Length: 119
Image (cartoon, rainbow, N blue to C red; front, side):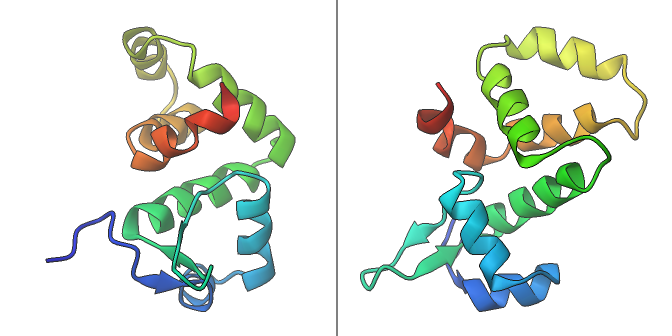
């Protein structure tokens, strides 16, 4: 039985699904913005959770004034903020703010998968 963490999608599948280039996906991996599973032949394999993470990432990086570096810095800070403090902060923000997207990302398994790169 497959679950949301089962790595079943290749780079080309995900690129098509998200309407982005395979090279951009590889860059996100090299920049430690996503951590796909590696198959025995070192092929990147993505889960549904990885795809959801990437959708949020693209939404944030597409916002004015958030670069990849800016995203990384915010992510780094999120590892040190208590969940209850962050959740309280997010509740006070407008529904279309970037913080609601970051809250979704904090609940994605990729948040913990990437912790080793940011702490």
